[in-house]
Image 1 (cartoon, rainbow, N blue to C red):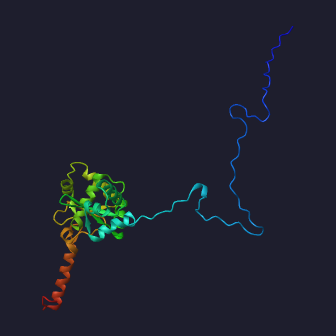
Image 2 (image 1 turned 45 degrees about the horizontal axis):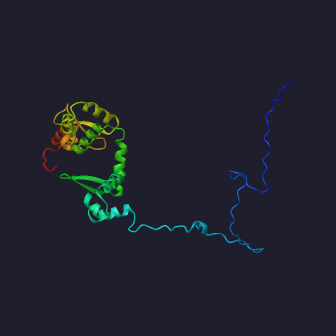
Image 3 (image 1 turned 180 degrees about the vertical axis):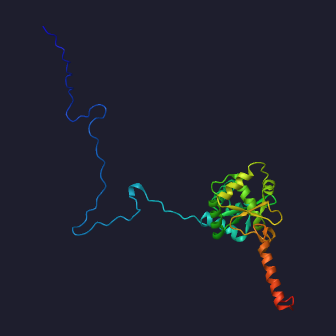
Length: 255
């Protein structure tokens, strides 16, 4: 005989009709639906107001405006009272501690809203008008990509104005012992600065901003060009004067 290897079937459990199997099987009962109002034929159901919430979920909270205006407008009020403001003055006006005020000040400075000034060790802040703010942003864009040392060299040349400053003086005021000639060369290649000759020393280079014109003390006025005296122009004027004297014979100094 061959052995019967088929699995044994489990006899169906005898359970009364309509009873729930153990473990909570079967379909879950549906939640009772909310009452729906019927609309008469020919009429449109009214729309629920925007932003309203069903009664089952409670009432939506209303937005409350903060009193006293925005933080930026409140800070501007401090600068309207005084041109230069201290950290303590901002703290008193806003009613915040120093840590919070410092964060606000740093954010304003990063956005070019305020400028920092040093008054004998005390840091003062000044609100920047729109024209100064625009000029400051243009200056930042112009100096973008320069190193800290190169920016320091540029600032000293900027301070010198139309009188200019020599390479040795740049090293002294910036306290940079090496690398100054290369920094000057890079600033010149970016058309930020230029060098001119001076009447005091023909071989000495004086550095100034590209857009400035040197003063007469540096180049000697119309009788000099790049620090060199225009002798040929003076000789030509002498010839004209001598010819005039020979023709007129008698002249006065007022002519």
